[in-house]
Image 1: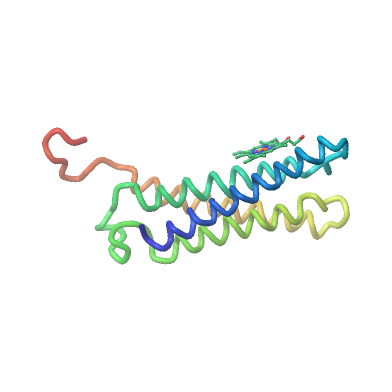
Image 2: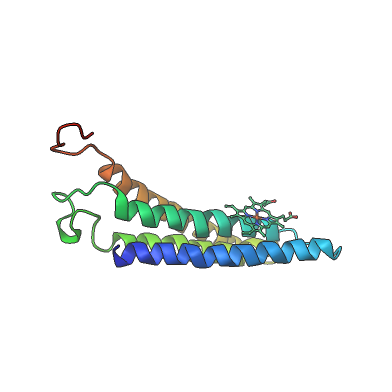
Length: 148
Ligand code: HEM
């Protein structure tokens, strides 16, 4: 498994631990009758869907989708060399920025700008991943008999 995919998958596992701890904390809070801060469930959900699920899906897909050796010669057919690092940094930097800024938006305009920037970063990460996954989603160029 290439280093780039390991980076995504290990990050996703760390996020899952944080998601579980965060969820447990919210459950304990509710059990004790203490109100959960309004944005906690939303940020927990971002950490779960983007941090755990998207990192896992992207890491495995970048590794597993059919190779395109003619197009991506530097990486044995996987992607432009630096693309996964850009996608990783934009996705996870954007996630962190969102979790920091979103709960504080009402206190300063800078937090609103931060959330806007996080949305931009996560959109760029998604587009980068979509571009690579789109090009690599294809049939085998010379399929063996009986193979599709
Ligand atoms: C792994 C252990 C997890 C625990 C202990 C946990 C716990 C919780 C708790 C207690 C809430 C409710 C907070 C409230 O009262 O509003 C919640 C909300 C939520 N969780 Fe989790 N969760 C876990 C994992 C996940 C995962 C893996 C996902 C998604 C992939 C997820 C997605 C959500 C969503 C979408 C909400 C609702 C957010 C909202 O109300 O806006 N959770 N979770």
